[in-house]
Amino acid sequence: MSQSAAATQANDDDKNAVYKRITLRLIPFIFICYLFNYLDRVNVGFAKLQMLDALKFSETVYGLGAGIFFIGYVLCGVPSNLALTKFGPRRWIALMMITWGTLSTCLLFVTTPTHFYTLRLFTGAAEAGFFPGVVLYLSQWFPTFRRGRIMALFMSAIPVSGLLGSPFSGWILNHFAAGQGGLAGWQWMFLLQGVPTVILGALAYFLLSDSFANAKWLTAHERAVLEADLANKPKTTTDSLLEVFKNPAIWAFGLIYFCIQSGVYAINFWLPSIIKNMGFSDNLVIGWLSAIPYLLAAVFMLVVGRSADLRKERRWHLVVPMLMGAVGLIIAVNFATTPAIAILGLTIATMGALTGLPMFWPVPTAMLSAGAAAGGLALINSMGQMAGFLSPYVVGFVKDATGSTDLALYLLAAVIVAGSVLALRMTRTLKA
Image 1 (cartoon, rainbow, N blue to C red):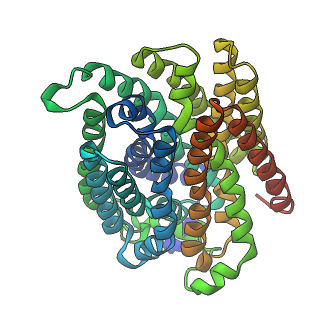
Image 2 (cartoon, helix red, strand yellow; image 1 turned 45 degrees about the vertical axis):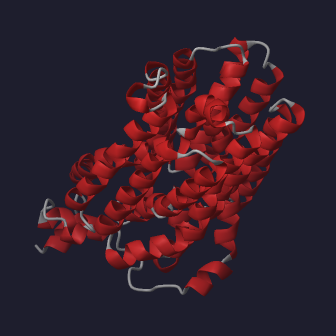
């Protein structure tokens, strides 16, 4: 019997063993890379606790600096993902990580708003292709019906980055507050969280395989199993960039992702400050309290991802977490003077908003053709990342204007609800 025929007739236990091996080989390393990617993206939320006073920045300057990252990200997302398909994931991911790790480390030298804006802009450009590239990369290793759990495993790096990064960042700010080595605590944070990214980038070149077809660690039978499972996706057609931009489904998915990310980035950038405003002053305590929502979000994300795959259902596994994100923000606003309830609200918001991310991506990867995937996924991601610019800037502007973040969080909750309505419409006819 030929390898292809044997692969087609492989039973579920055989296939599960193949995918378990692939998961153990790829996901832990990609998880760590994404953990540092996300940690790099949100560590300015903790740096803010010292940067603003040290550099005499206003809340609006901080919000613009935090958000301008995403202008570079949006502008470079599509071309970066197309470059990944041209040069191969192994080389391109390595180059991106080394570049953004270096730029992020250089944030320790910031002294003016212009320095801050410039480094954040170029760091965003360097990171632009990483996430959509990994989504595309994983879609070429795992069939649609296995992507819920895989995306949840991969994207659980987001809450884990908060779970581990929040106490770690708080400890760095406290431990180096006296200015050891001539650097302030916030400068040490950028150094200690930027250098490992450069090292991981170098490792990516040696540890990743461009595709299952040239993965020497797979047997011929294992490669045949993957080829059989992924055979229903066309591999040879390529949509032009113009066709990608003319596809209304891509724009609709991008808008949904924008709504999800609006809540996510509001939490990521402002969670430490919101907790500080509840009356907590010690940076380490703020770090530990910030870790609670991320811990529960990580567990919830994995549970929902497994449920979505077992039930072969995507629609409500996406919409319900989105609505949780909106409800949680509203609770946090209305009970801001009661820390226990406010933190409960932030926890619900974090669990919902972050779980919406991995539950979203199996939908467009299932519905887009292979030809539209490279440019389409990057365009969707770029639209979503625009929330990374607008969300922190709006919160900062409202905080400066009113002295409170309440109005901004109400607005972001409304945006998430609108996105959930659009998601219901877009997923109405989706078959798992």
